[in-house]
Length: 303
Image 1 (cartoon, rainbow, N blue to C red):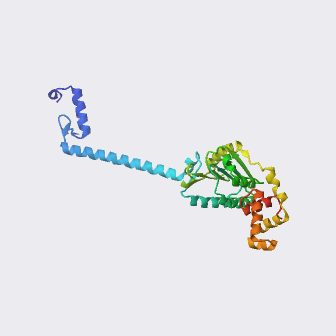
Image 2 (cartoon, rainbow, N blue to C red):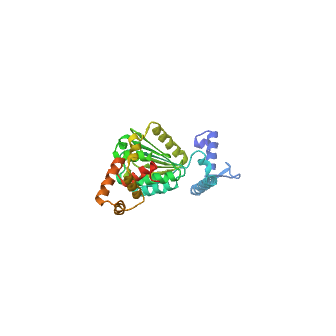
Image 3 (cartoon, helix red, strand yellow):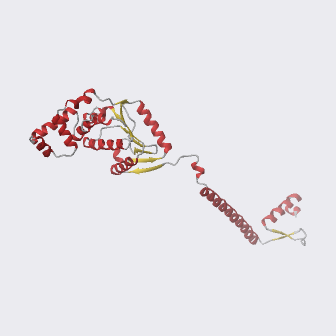
């Protein structure tokens, strides 16, 4: 066979081994050369069947490995958590959602609240609500810090509010620049704007001690580079010169008595009463009657 094929004996033996391994030859002790030929179609069919069995066995083996890994991951969920702190982010897509969330978070804060306010001031009509919220926090013993930009603090009604806001339990500072609006509740919750340039686009509520700790560090940096709001001496002493009639007016206003009833009690006309109130607000350096009552209360003159 080697002679007829024009090859060496070793090459002929190697060829027979290859044909035997592919199934085209089958061992046959009775044949002169020790092999008999096999129909090529039948041999190839057996060859492909064997390969399919190998592929199927391999796929089954891979599936068993995948199942084992999946079971391991589900059985030990803390494997990843050992290296990272879980952080949950809520998206508050409208100002209404943001305000509702802030109200809820403020009612649940336990020890401290820190707020950074860059940009322009809030509308003047919200100042009374801000003062009420400050008093409520003070009543619960919540430590409150506030950071405002200096140009905002120079606006008259904001200057009056900041002087009112700086009391035991709440400290206010001003800075030339603040990076972004930020409110921190205790050590676990932060509220940041989705777009720092446009607060109307909503905010992110971030839950997670590790990330909030980093935001506290940023706040601390801005805090230490800001200056405290100082109460002007003339604002501290202005109420001491109020006459008895003006003090009665303030007390009655603080009690919610209507203008007409106060005028009747004092025996003056409504026009005279309005003039007294306007002069009182001007002397106290405030814009609303509520702010006037708050200022007098801080001086201990409403008791």
